Image (cartoon, rainbow, N blue to C red; front, side, top):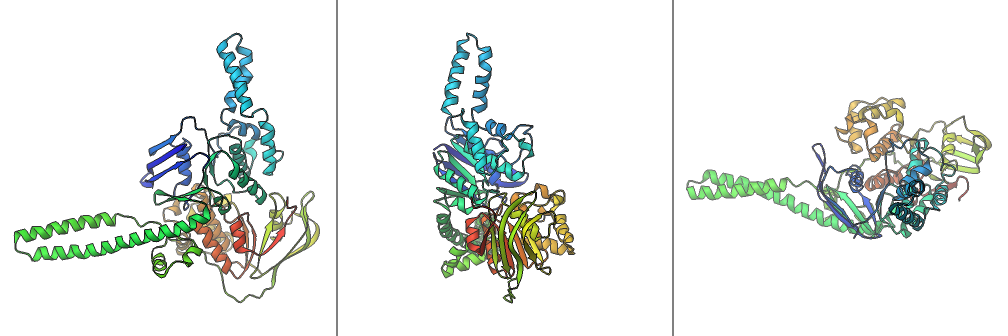
Length: 546
């Protein structure tokens, strides 16, 4: 065991976020960390990496354990290059480099410094640091970050910074790697390379992710839920089966609590009535005592908060009648996505392209053909930078894109809903309530306050969330804003760009279920293998497959 974690209290103001998180990590163990948006997964990583000490509990590492973590914010990076940033994040590299570069000028005959210098040279070689720059540049190339090694880190996009963080971890030679949503912004080839590294790496890993392709490769899944943690041995598919069984038991226990509460309420009234009718002092004391103990037990049971119950759709369909009825009664609220699902599909063409070649100064791709009709789905597949976004922009009528061949048409009558990877910065300084209103107004649709509140409820936002500026919302919350924006105009064509990024597992499943019933057309980009298998449709290759 290299780590033992116990968090008995972590709060933000009056809100308790965690109160019973307990687990350990073994050498080389790969653990997926899952949980609904907002349960504290990234907060947990802040505690484990030592950045957050404001909690009750303990985080114990085996002596000598080196921990490396991806960062989500990069406010104080300065003017360093990408290569310098990665090197600075490697344990020991900076200290060893400093000794090797500075000691020859100052050590003279100082045997202590000579010994430290000699040891540093040996350690530098043992760690493979003489070849590390070449290896980092090669890894950047593998993630389609060619030519950026000497570029200022601060100039990179958010997606590029995430990939650099992953490269940093891959070369950190740590004992424990903490990776927060590492595959967001990776294309399918980069993700496959990352998964290969996860399989073979010597490091133990804690990976916050709802990427089911990654979760399929882990040794264990830890779910953060209701302030505590639950451990499930095995990968994602095994987790689903175990979760269905354990959730069934938990629902049964909770139903027993509810029945006991109902019985105690009756008993309290009975004892109170019998006490009032009695004339014998001993009898009065007896019923008073029974009433008091019943009230005490009732208060204790009523203080128990309802657990969060979620079972995946496939497992839920296979539940027996009794458990299925319990699940319908107790299941956790999920996002409610409303898409038109009537069966009156005309099957007329909404998007058509023939031997299309697009680009800017030169073609990005050529010979792309699309025939997308109502009720159908088409996946755009290609590496990052191959031109998928350019193709989508051309479909939407962007005139800045050069046509090098072929043609493209879009049904001028079709309403389009677009899911983009990032919320527009135009909404960042607005509160959530104002942002939802602006989303509708920007599409020429008026929206009353009652509709705003209804949408917030449908997408799991609280009234307090409505007053929070969008820039302060979590990635999962911003993703739900994107869903609201996409569906505002009751679209007949959906264009989805990595829609599963940031969404938690129940929300992903709800989105998939809604899309399989959708009567319009779907044009999508996704590197989530489970999502692609569910939505299906024709695959249009944009650019080279490698």
